Length: 393
Image 1 (tube, rainbow, N blue to C red):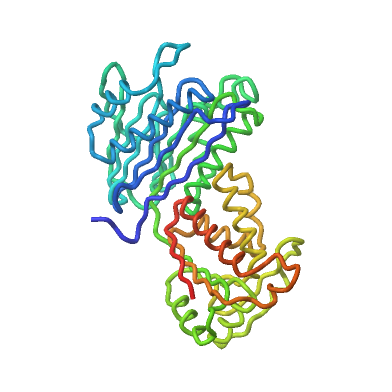
Image 2: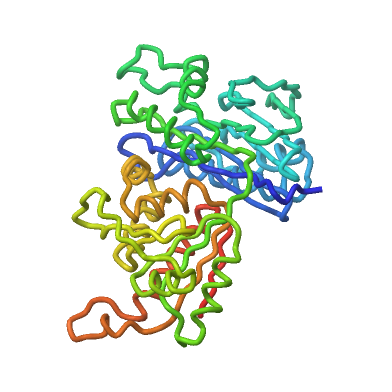
């Protein structure tokens, strides 16, 4: 039976081979049902377009077949008969790693020619116990185990293993150094994406930011669910203020309020003062935050949320702004930390009132802008892997 307080969290990041527009690695994540999460990391032969086609086909086919409970033997044979043959090398070849987790506990890992996946358990790096079988000349390694809370699994393409060859290191840093590095930086509070970003960025730095191979890190971990609720804008009818706030506060977890009028509504409902945080560091782009007793974060509205959307778009690309929002204390950065790092489940409470201050001639902000902003942010968060619900008032 699935433990409802737990969730299987996935995060990954790739860097392309220098000079290539397409990545030769591909990640495919599927959830055939509420209790199952499957991730496939495939590394196509070579780099560029051909490698991208091989890895994409491999990962998509394997994820669908594993989701349908097709045996690994049949999966391998189907892949072998389907992949296009490379004209130069006369072979169809893509390495792969599959991880399947059911009920946030039961783990199956299959690995073919990628660096051997390992885990962090109770804060320490731990090798997994694998059995091997040969299928059509390919040696497939299989690990099966029961995971516990905060168990974290690391999957990677060989671009990680050979990072730095010919640049900062003579022979790359290989698995012992990779494990040592992760053992040092690991914190159980880090999200899967944060850990993948840290390792991938370290590889990119070792490559002198000129990766000599497609480089992909995928991290899968078991964590507790965390609800974050964000209220943005007053309701279209003033008489709905109380209902909107009461439903917002009824949600467990973290509460964020964005917008000046919205903040006043919540302040009045709670009968607590709205206090501007004069100690906030000065920021030319983002207005200062405020405080209301009982609310985790109070920010300005559209400017702040628009910045969060910018961070979300970047998060889905190369996450290069990660170290910007992770350590800053402005309203947008703090919202990003809550939504990207801490949240698993997000509820938006969106008021549909038209702000007359934004309707004047020459104003670039209007009602449709506000609605589009939240809709787009919600879609980005879903792509990130969050469970998102939007409630309109």
